Length: 285
Image (cartoon, rainbow, N blue to C red; front, side, top):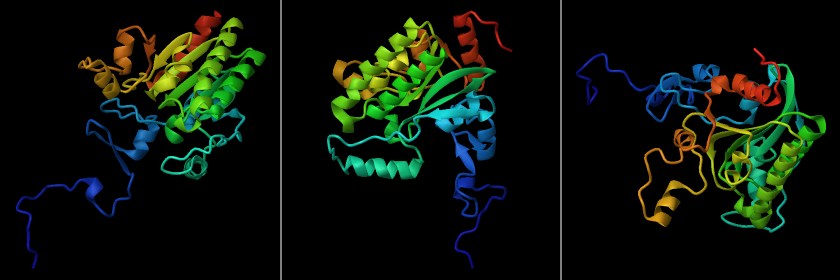
C-alpha cells in the first residue's frame, strides 16, 4: 500500500525529474522557457520563445557562416606552453592537457578560411569552453597569423570574441597579446581591408580592451555581456549602483560602443552586407 496518493489527476511531472528521460533532451532557458534540444539546434541554439542566445563554440559559428561548412583551418595544431611553470589549484601544464582532452580543442581560438555567400574571408573564432576563452600567447599568435593571411590574400577579416580576458597563467605573455593584435589590426586597416568584430556572450577583460572593440563595424548578439571589469568589481571600486542593463549589448548600443545588434539567424547575411558596403561591392542576395 502506498503511503501517499495523488489527490488531483492531470498533474504532470517535469521532464527533467523523470528518470527515464535522457539528460539533455530538453533545454531550459534562464527565463524558464523549455525547448526540445533538437529544435534548439535547428534554431541555431536560440530559444524561440524568449530569443535567448545560448552560448555556442567555433564549430557552430563556422557552420553558420561558411558556405556548406567548408573551410581550411590555419595553425590548427598550435598549442600553449608553460613558460612560467604556473601552478594555482593545479599545474597549468596539467590544466592544458585536461581541457584539450575534454573539449577536443588545441586552444581558445580557431582560424578558418573559406567562402561565405560565395566570397572568401578569414574568420577567427574563440571558444569559451577552453579555459574561459582566455587570451594567451597562442590566441594572440593565431589571431595575428589570421590577420597576416587576410592581408597577404586581400581578404576581409572577421573576429568572433567570446572570452573572460587575459590568461592569468601566462601573466605578461598574455598581456603582450593586446598590443600584438592591435598592431596587426592597424596593418589590416592600412591595407584597406574590412574588419568586422562580433562580440558574443561574454566578451570581457583584455579582449574588450583590444581587438574586440577595434572593428570597422562592431556588432553583437542580443543580450551578450560585454565589458572590461565585472559589474561587482566596478560597483565595489566606484561605490555607486550601476544602471539597469549595465554591460549588456543593448546598453552598449544605446551608448555608442556598438554599431549593431544582430540576431544569430541574420549573422551571415549582415556580416557579408557590411563587407560589401565597406568594399563598395555589389550587394549579395
